[in-house]
Each structure stands twice: as C-alpha cells, then as structure tokens.
Length: 293
Image (tube, rainbow, N blue to C red; front, side, top):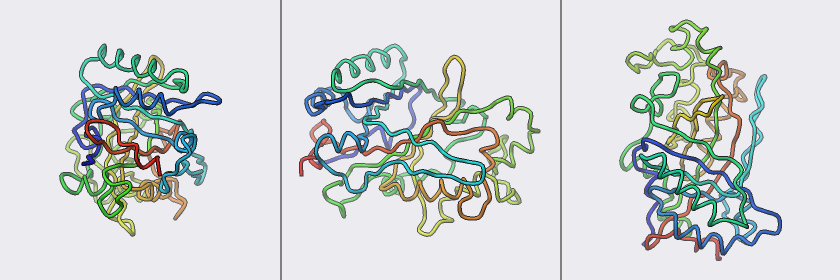
C-alpha cells in the first residue's frame, strides 16, 4: 500500500537542511537512486525529483513542469531548476550533517551537490521578521486533501508536488519601517497575529488568501527560516496536489492580475525557484513505479 512521505504532513522539525543536486554529464542515475532509497525514509528525509531527473530516467510525470517565468511591475522572479531536492528533518545538527554526507556520497558520481542550506524553527514557528508563518495552513483531512494526490489519480496516488523558493530578507530595509507599517505589509499584527481588516490591497495576506481564488488555491506550507554567515530569510516550501494553486498565488503576488504588488517585495526577494515531484512510499521505500511506465 502506498503512503505519503510522512515528513510532508508532520509538524515542522526543530532543525533542517535542504540539499539541491544537479545531474552530472552523461549521468546514469538509476543505480544511485536505488542507493538513495536505502537512506530516504520519507519522514526524516523527504525527497523530491526535478523534471531533468525524471527525463534522464526516460520517464514522464505529466503534472511535473518547469518553474514558470513570473514577472510583474518591477519584478522578475528567478527560476533555478534542479534534478533532486532533499529535505533533512531532525533535532540534532551533527546527526543531520552526517546524514547529508551519507546521502551526498551515495549519489556520487551521478549527482553533484549544488546547494546546502541549514534551517531552524524560530519562536514557535515564526519567520525571522517575527510574524507567524503558515497561519492559514489547512489541517487534518484538509491538509491531506491539499497536499497529497488522491486515489482518483491512481498512478500518482499518495505522492505530492512541492514548490521551493529561498527568500533573502533585507533587514536594514525592514527595520527602517515603523512597526505599524510592518504590520500593514503582512496584513496581520505581529503582537497577536490578528488579521487587519482595513489593511491595503498590497498586504500579503490579502494577496494570498487561499479561499479568494477560483478555484481555491490551497497549499500546505512547510517553510522554515534559514541563515548562513552573511544572509538569512525564509525557505519557502509549499506542497500541493499540483502546481496550479502555487502559481495562482505567485501571479497575484507580483501584480500580474491587477498591478498591485505584494508588499513583501519591499524587504524580501526570492533568489531561487524550483519544482519537484515527491513520490509516495511503499514498504518503507520510495515508490518509483510511476517512473517505469
């Protein structure tokens, strides 16, 4: 029986590391993916396949596509496709580091590690700006319906699709803003997380209210703050049954519908953008049967 990768639906971990891999020229990835299958349990280690990897395997996942070229007034968001994405979840930074090393070694020589970013839970689930992240997330059965492909699509049942963006915050800009202006950018008060009814149309919560789209654009956010020695921000991670809900929100954020740009862009910008398919699990291993059709 297929089941989702459990880490998709579980609460956020204390610590995480995100690994992004590219395919080496003339790579033969099938054997290396079998090795990865010995290390990926779907709970502590969540795995996503990019379009390039699926193509290299001679397969096709119809709903898997390239990250779109999205632009709006004064904005052009980056697309940074990758072959493989791994989300390591845990509570011990050293253990996560060694797990990452084992995965990297298992994937050589077919894959090359391109990026590794460490993330962490901050103040009970807040972004580094101090605002609660994922307030509108669906829960329970609604979370499953939003994030996990159902039995009506039997080939992909229990799998998921994930959009990943690494946002970099400009805290010099953010901290120059008065506290009430910061609240209006988000559309919620930082002090009590209550929505501000008369917030401007550019407020983030108004731009991305999932029920305001037709059809409704629900995703399951699993974003976490990240930081290195020079920069910091939010690793935006959104699971869904297709990329349509995410793209609907993104188009509205950049103002492609009405020219109103999300106020978030006043102090933060994405530096990456990629799509991945997260296969289901079967008997404790990644179920790669949809790639063998």
